[in-house]
Amino acid sequence: MDLKDKKIAIVCDWIKDMWGAELVLKHMLEAFPNADIYTSVFWQQDNPIFKWRKIVTSFIQKIPFLNKSHKLALVLRPLAFESFDLSEYDIVISSSSAESKWVITKPSCLHICYCHTPTRYFWSHFHEYINMMEFWILNPLWKWLMPKIVHKLRQWDYCAAQRPDFFIANSENTKKRIEKYYKRDSEVIYPWIDSDRFIFNDKKKDFYLYVWRCIPYKKFDLIVDAFNENWRKLILVTNTDNKLYRELKNKSKENIAWKLNINGKSGDNYISSEEKNKLYSEAKAFLFPPEEDFGLVPVEAMISETPVIAYGKWGALETVIPPSDFPFNKGRKQAPTWVFFEEQTCESLNEAIKKFENQEFDPQIIRDWALGFDKSVFKGKILMFIEGILKN
Image 1 (cartoon, one colour):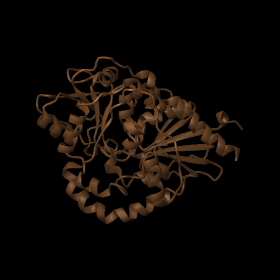
Image 2 (cartoon, helix red, strand yellow):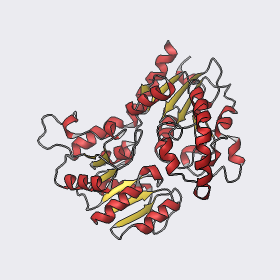
Image 3 (tube, helix red, strand yellow):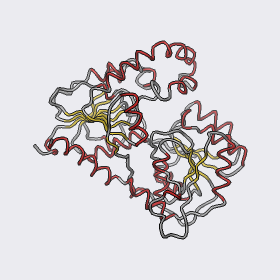
């Protein structure tokens, strides 16, 4: 039976916003256009990419308050995914940074987990998450409770990670953690971008840019503190209108502008996705301060011919390549300019910015590198991976 004749389900942790994991889902749906979707909660009803899809949500979708705060539903999500009946499917692909890999499939079903990361709040970043809880008035309760239950949650997560037949990792960095925490091997297939959606501009403007969800580990606070000190122009774009966003916006000096990119909303402080992409092309540099498993946003900046100033750890080491290591650099007089900073501090970031401003970059080389992450590359690799399994 050909792959196109297989009945396929894609299982996601949750579908709330449209950022990294959700963009991966979008392109999976392009690779598998007839796939059905299963998820714990779904809040993208107005998004055209889901209009005609079969979407099955869990019982959490019907629980008031918890259905809008998936983090508070932590202990319910394993039960939610185990409750899905996937017996009619030939292939199940779980797109997972949390519990979607917990689904139970029949022996005849091929289950592949596309892993964005082993669950960060159980494993690699447990202590960091404890110190930056997002439950506000419930923070003291969760800080007291989580250390008491995390050992059992890790056991459950490890057992669930034995259920997929194969793992795909979104980076070499994630591959190492899958092996460390789950004792599983994995194939690396990088996430991808729609290169056609992005534009480039020969005339850069005098501002720096950061785009992402405004949550603690994305390090918006670090950037605000650094630019409050250096007084350079900065634009911050997020789709997260939460308490942290409002606190940091109030803390920002007049050289820092905030923009909200929220689907279906418009107004003085809101920008469309097209306007966001224009900012990518106009910025003198894109900032990337977090420890990320992979991170699509610096690739989006580079496809717009915009250099990146990144924290030199984890996923950035696979997407933002130092000039000396760059494969396209041979024979060119002008080297690309990507600058790493070594510590997540204002001092280290501002030193990197000073270094960046004293260097030149080659926009064409930057774009050439980023084109290696185009969606066409992903489609070919994941289809080849699955077809190879089915042939054996």
